[in-house]
Amino acid sequence: MKNNNRLLSQVIAILLLTTILFVSAEAQKIELKPGHPQEYIVQKGDTLWDIAGTFLSKPWYWPEIWQNNPQIEDPHWIYPGDVLTLVYIDGKPYITRNKRGGTVRLSPEIRIEALKQAIPTIPLDIITPYLTKNRVLNAGEYSSLPYIVGINDQHMSAGADDSIYVLGIASDTTDMTYGIYRKGKAYKNPANKREILGYEAVYLGEGLLERKGSPATIYVEKSKAEILKKHRVIPINRDGIVDASFMPKASSLSRPGAIIGVLASGTQPGVSMVGALDVVIVDAGLKDGVEPGDVFNIYKKGAIVKDPVRTGRSVKLPNELSGNLMIFRTFNRLSYAIVLDAQTDLRVGDLIKSPFMQQ
Image (tube, rainbow, N blue to C red; front, side):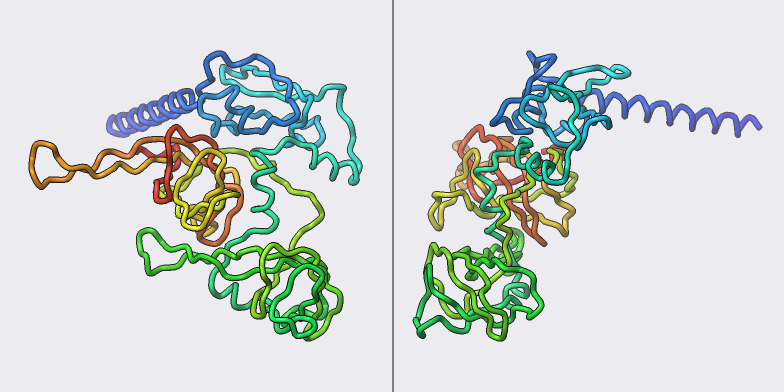
């Protein structure tokens, strides 16, 4: 009996210690930013990441303090004019949202327009092309896409105002707008250069399906590069609605990853330098459980230098925490991400880690 009581006491002590440690860890990680406001009125042009950084030293903990108001229509969305207030519930900080002017019931039509007006998580003007046109495919996906077999008047190449003839579009398709692509750069596993994680599908232009059949006819409305036979077509969304309202949060990926490519507008092939607001490709995707909104710390790889004292010996300097990035679109084994901030020059090959991981 005494042994049972002693065992029970030990179990209770362990549970109490675990609870104390957990609460302590929770309290430590939610670190309010020095000088944070008690109340903030959302402005047009704000992003959720900016707002999170206004209240928190580590903005990826925003989900921990965001308090949904079930009485407000679409409580996950934040709009210009909304009032965000810092409150404390049971000693823990939370952000509440109140609409200026009261609650408005939204019809389906108004709801679509409201989604356009809701503030995005990250800058839409930078990421929209990568949400609607750019994409990454594996070799099997690319080879199975419908492809161009001919061009009107037997031209060798097509551009705007030409018609192209495509095999592989289903006769019962409801898709009317198609992007035109060629296979681009192969992205390789940094740990195994012989393993290809995916291919960039390079956007060449887009057009409207004029006639179904085998082949089908697509009228090319716009082109930004030469379109040739064997290039592929993919249905694209042109309704103008881009949902970038995902919640910023620390990634739960338990392994380190790496930046393996730069996609940002204006960069030239072969560019390896990375800076703030650049769009990059990282070697983690759906198979790794990565989701839009996942935040990673970026570590600049430490250089290898010669030991100035001991001849012939090299020393690798430590990796340095140098910025943050956020995933905004995922593919099978790769993802698009935007560099949110960079304290120094970064490069392709620099490491990414979940904020939960130790360096």
